Length: 375
Image (cartoon, rainbow, N blue to C red; front, side, top):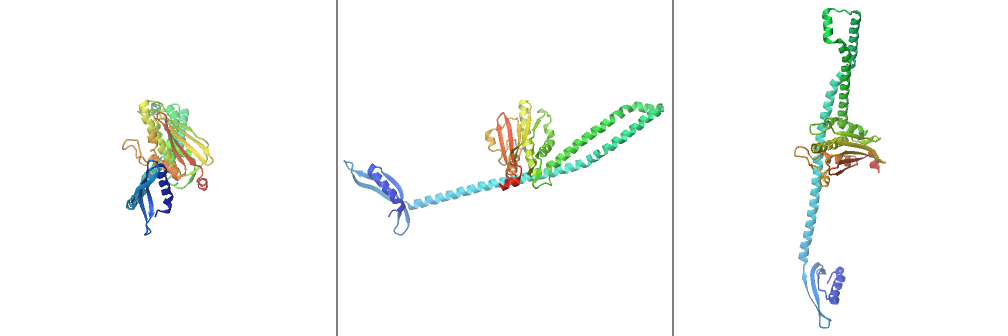
């Protein structure tokens, strides 16, 4: 009656009970006359006489089919529950990721539109100023020449004119006015550079893959963050050390990469501000770029701040995870940066940090997306 697959095992079990005197308790299958497979629990032991000979086998057989069916049902239920829990966790993770992308996308879209709008509004008046500086300089030069000619051919002006010339110090004006115009031109040039950096950072019209010099994106981000790098009441000036390698233009989404640079540099500044408030040490950010493979470039942004614990590092790219006080951070910056580098560009974003030694974020990016997809 025993199931063919269980017969050998039963023989071995009974033989051990006879040869070694080991009692047994095993679950086996039998073939019911009606064709069903039923489960039994078989218990038994050998009985020996005074000379050590087996004189009988004693045991019981109990039908445990219903119990096995319940156990199988429970196992199936547990398996389904685990599968559902796994699916729910996966769905929750996807929802969090989608939510963070939507929030950050909307945020960056708003910021990009604002930046582009501000750049446009600044560009119009500064272009007017910049365009009129050279004519103003020529007019001023002509007026000074005319004044000098009057002084040369009419050395004795009327008393009223002489008093006005003495009061206004015409010689000093003639010398200083060109300097003022040169200073204005330098300021206008600086504003034009800032406007160019704002436009380069926003890049609202460049949503497709472009061949881009990523150094321009880094520089544009630094211009926008310049006010945070200057000396503040709580800390000294944050030094920026640039170690740029000779990089080819890479195929990327420039607006998205600029967003990554902004997030990483802003976080580095935040860490340095907190560190400097407590230590008073010189603070710096080091930016290193290089070709690191056949189709790969790397960008490393390192600070000499307080560093990040291993526990925090394990969660640092999780959506909505933040160590900043409530209201100071959303926990989206690094998560979005990771998605941009990993999913949008097929690259890698890693964090290396030791407490008291600072933090480095390393970005690895393919030079050509076509090369990456084809291989």
